[in-house]
Image (cartoon, rainbow, N blue to C red; front, side, top):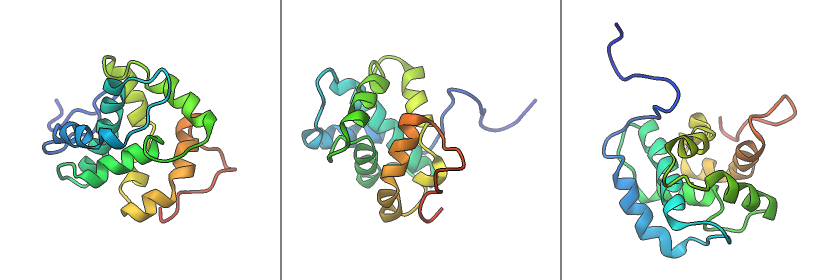
Length: 147
């Protein structure tokens, strides 16, 4: 019998007070631009999930910067290519109700990348978006900056 936190598919990364990310996401929603067909409850779940993952990687509760990084990464607070938005609308659909959908997107964000300083994370966003949209890279894609 193993002692400690269980690991495996759909478990995520536990951290202290991760539910606080949901409250922070609600404060940011006035800055979020939804595409046609997107629903706020799906966006809440995905942005909070990525923010929780970043915070948990540091062993701390979520902060507003974690939420902003998650929203920026998914292109909710800045301009991103149209093909990424099309992918995002499909990938995030029903994430507010379907935990496996939420986990698939959140797990698609590399924890090593998220654990970098905020400026480094922001610098690597185009590559992180590419990896989310098209899967993990082969030898033709570079490593994230600072990783």
